[in-house]
Amino acid sequence: MLVDAIVEAIRLAVTRIPDDVVSALSEAHAREDNEVARFNLENILRAMEIGKDGLVPVCQDTGTVTFFVEAGVGSPFLGEVKGWLVEATKRATEEIPLRPNAVDVLIGRNSGNNTGKGVPVIHWELVQGDAIRIAVLPKGGGSENCSALAMLTPSEGWDGVKRFVVERVKECGGKPCPPVILGIGVGGGADYSLLLAKKALLRRVGERNPERRIAKIEEEVLEEINALGIGPMGMGGKTTALDVKIEVAHRHPASFPVALVFQCWANRRAFVEIKPDGGVEVWQ
Ligand code: SF4
Image (cartoon, rainbow, N blue to C red; front, side, top):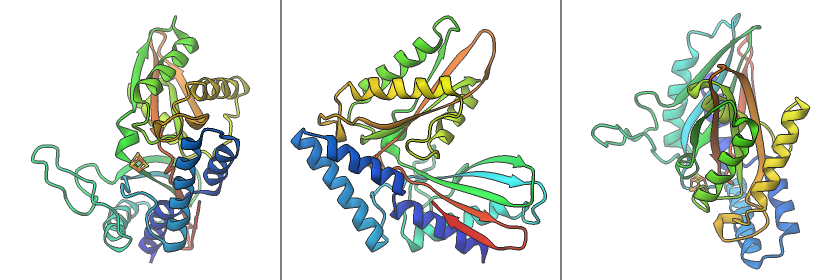
């Protein structure tokens, strides 16, 4: 059943941190000489081992279940996918289990199954082809709380982007559970820059933006962030961020939107592809 594959992808995302993230954390541990930072990184790496071996979530906050769907216009399953994503979220909450994280904003009641008005969060993009590709991004609350948007003036430009990002990271300190990965969306409008920033978190650690000038800015921001010395869990050290990912869109002549979305060390993701014959592939 195709819902099983989506449940499997959610399980993979919350229990197993992708290899590129584990390698980046191990490298951070190897170059660290601050004892407290080394200890924090060891604990993080241990939590990942336990999650992987025991198939238990690597963090108690299993996040808001968020899907990015690239829906091939020729897929015979277009009309059914939304129902499957909701059902898979309910089943994953019970079977893995996930922490129930969907609260009614008016009465404060938790739905108990991670579904409700607007959740799971589903972002849709129609693409050519007949396959449906779904990215699962469980998003923890601690890191999400540090997200921020600035509507810069065009004259502030890229220097303004850097200033805004570095100031916000400083302000948040240990709250987003560093080492973090930063998704930065520049351009579009307020809404689209935030979407770009979150989607950027799906890229592998070390994968640079294909546009050379943006890739260079990613590296410069990463260097500035790590020079802050906030360190793992905010207790000092060389690695505050594992990576910085920038995505861009054209902007209005009068606006320079910049959105910043934090992802904590529990940088979780998984993918499912549903083929037109009903075959599925799940990977990280
Ligand atoms: S921010 Fe991330 S690591 Fe920290 S508690 Fe939330 S999910 Fe867990």
